[in-house]
Image (cartoon, rainbow, N blue to C red; front, side, top):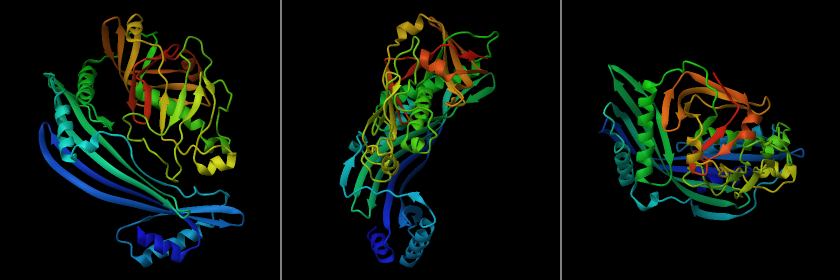
Length: 423
């Protein structure tokens, strides 16, 4: 790193930013319950971004630095990047000023050796393998420790350490000579054996129900319940529309003060862009530019309050720099499990992907597995799709009081919408 900074100063007068990620991993690979492979790795990726001020503009160009690059090769890359940057004509802006930080993103992983943690995660996964015709056909456990660093020519130096794990499982159901498999990727930053077991057990039940699921004989006209994965997609789509870059490029649909949710009987939407949410591997203290992240309320009570984004577009719009906030937080609602049980509804357990189009006011998608819930009875069904107006879905959206983390999302684990067509 010192060599790169020295070569930069000797080769160019341009401003620069250097991003480094050092990743240490410990990995276990199982076929059924037999450990086939144990692997550990230690890798570093580093990129340099050069900023060239010219003719009242600021251009930038990035390149990767490999461990095999000689000093002469790095200098050649710098000179080539400077030429490329001078072809870019962005409105001028300033890089983040001198600031230092050295921190850890909260996780309980640091209390255990990576090998022991991986073994405990595998044990928690296999504890879910209790169904007679079900099994975990394959299991892969990855434990990561990342050190992320940003340095720039203004003297900014920031470093954070992050821990995370990923479980890739193939739950399988065998019955009458037929077999059904599903793929599950579960990511987390806090070790809780019980929650890991519950997650894998749920997927084993789902693969069983995929085997038995049938297409409904008649059309359904009931409220649709989306789970956290779909709510995460919705929140990220709304947040994306409220980024500074979208506002600057005039591609945003919603503006400050707009009523995003014209409520009928739904819970009021309050959505935040966050630096950290519990259990998410996306949590961070700063963004790729090195800007400190500042939580921002985007929507409150269904009304757009703020935009958010990194330093460049914040300067263009004369807005406060929040940083490129990586997480979203949707506030909980009033929907309880007891209330749900009183109304027949369709729970989407597995979708091919929630399709959202803000401009055409559309929400929908193909459902691979759903449950028609009528009181205490849950019938697995498949081969259906849902579609409708996004504005109607938001107006009637009831959010659960129970919360969970899914990817970069933290919020209600269920959301009930009325008026969607099931076909």
